[in-house]
Image (cartoon, rainbow, N blue to C red; front, top):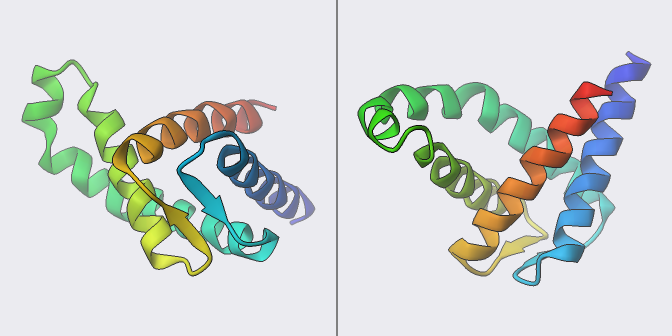
Length: 110
């Protein structure tokens, strides 16, 4: 249980770091980042597999690069759902989702 809480707080800090690095992403406070971490986890667990399955032909034709676009759209959707988080453009969401994926994978690896 403690390990789960540590990962949740760490992922929230990663979200705040991504918002600090990428100019088009803004987060009001740490609680918004905590809620965003939960929403992103739920979206990645429920909606993302369905979208990956539905867009499988496009994903195969682009050799998996379309998954990056799906990640950016889901990141924008999470920002839409969580009050206190704002994503200004698709490019910001695209770069932010890539950075969030890389840093999130690094945390999961540790």
